Length: 590
Image 1 (cartoon, rainbow, N blue to C red):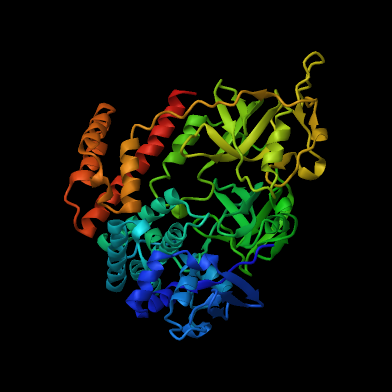
Image 2 (cartoon, rainbow, N blue to C red):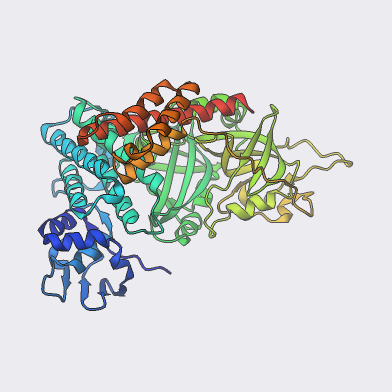
């Protein structure tokens, strides 16, 4: 079992960096990953780090104060050893609950009186957003790879200021960016440059809207704690259970429901820890008000409730006033569910892509769920091929490849069931909507239909305890669960054909170079190659992309604000084009 290292307050990191001598900061810029080579030893809730000559002591798992850090060298705590250790740790936010604030259960009940509104940003919030925007612009001007500790300290402090004045979304995104910059500069295996660039764009867009819009939507501001509002779903139909095992070190399970008001709702138990927590939540207990039941049961049951509350993203409340009672088993055969399975796939895609213009955390619950019926054809590489009734084809991919989960083994077992009709609920890939990540399946054949003796098709027959559906991340399929399963898997040659050429590739490549190496990096390219790429974009019918490439490579971007505006414009344009191209290709080429 891995041992989780401490987290540190961004404000403390900024304070130590700003107080350190210049020569110490320069040394850390030259060797940002030095502390990863040292010997880290946990001792109860404390840590001792042997640097090879000195020893650093961290006296807490959450480091918020200077007194919680010390080093044996004379410059402590403003020494290279302390700075090197703290700058490779994950940053956390200090959440302070005022004594005047009511308990969480009471907050949920009191917040049900009215829905959130768009409030004007106050002067302190606007000033904090402007400072954050300026700090992100500095990072982009020099490039993520060149963002030394001084620039990082400025970003840390601006993120802390956003948190202090209640700009919670900006602060949360800022912490993600700081973590990504630290990982990239330390050459960490967890470093993900494309995701970091995406996070930078999200952070810059958030700061820009808060700094320049008089009354931005409330989701751009965010909340410290998830507010609860009264909902009236009538009855909650359990749909499926989804495991959560994330790279951020969190694990658990989510039980999904469909309310008779047409909205999706969820109940979850997700905590810091390893994959076993997902199984614990599935087999153990998840709370909805006073009700505590295993995720396995919640996802297969029907409930009726009153005084129900939920957050804007569909998470059901746990308040003491909630009344909820089970009403037997739920079913995928109800008229409400059958209508969703019968909805044309193109209509479902249209609804999904309508949500991509807003941040992920502002999209409604289940916004990317897709309901399909089809017949398994066999495996192709790591994916299953699913033939739809309209003649189209989907590829079913592995939703989460963590070896502790059952997704991969279940798809492998289903490759022995070519010809089997199934219903699938999964998540559509925005980059390729013909790729569906299945979360749960059930038998798609008519219960009264019996295979003919000369052509007996496989049929899904899960044990009674599973109530006719299989949660692919949890319930391990066996051969006995598939009647007439083939002895050998049906395997098609893996489609190795490359994806369609990206017509916007020149702009994508130059923008990535600008973000990582600095806004001046694309200007160092050969002028002839830039001209060729601009002409290519024009030939492909993307005049806006051509103008953006020209501005990025030849425009006047000596000032950080201009560089940031160009980067943001390019990222928003590429995001919209990427999703629209993916949807159009899937619709035109079934």
